[in-house]
Image 1: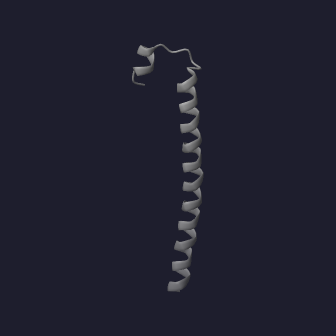
Image 2: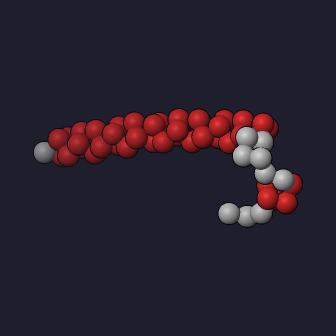
Length: 54
């Protein structure tokens, strides 16, 4: 009984890890996109607009 419960926990951790891998991959892609947008000034922002928070 204990081993079965332990296996279920391990499987759940593996599912969480898989989700985290997808999340981290998406964050890295977004970071690259943000850097590219910043470098090319695609949005046509001036210096003041670039520095303005949110």
